Image (cartoon, rainbow, N blue to C red; front, side, top):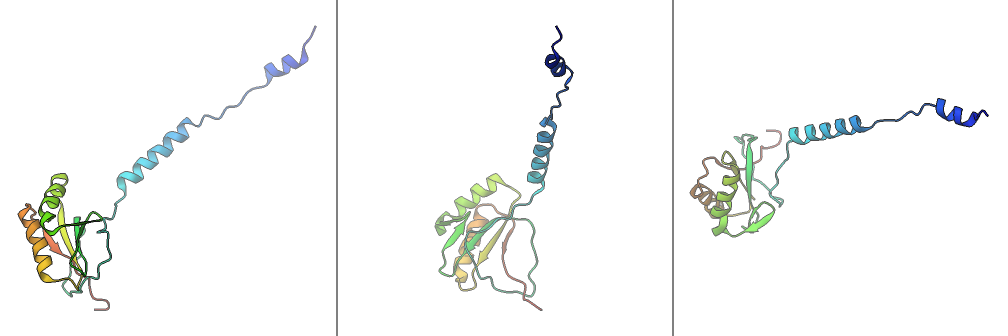
Length: 139
């Protein structure tokens, strides 16, 4: 006896879509974009920087310390005590010894606070400490 439906099932070719190479390519692209992306570090607060006509853009600012208008000091999105600047900078420099430090002080903050922060950075062993300023518009 001839079984026609079994013969048809046997002759029917099954087509499968193998998505493993596609998933591999997606992961490779994801890793590529993560490795090549440059992440912008922020201080955690909005600071109104003073302007300076001689301001120079520094691209290697890896450690940012902010001082707001009420002379509060912020590092890594958290407020720190002025006496703890040295310890925090030492920890940050241990993670990245080549890191440049930029102090982003509000123009309404006092000079004494900025000097205190910069002094703490120098005592922590930082070689490259800068004070942030904005370039004047249209000048």
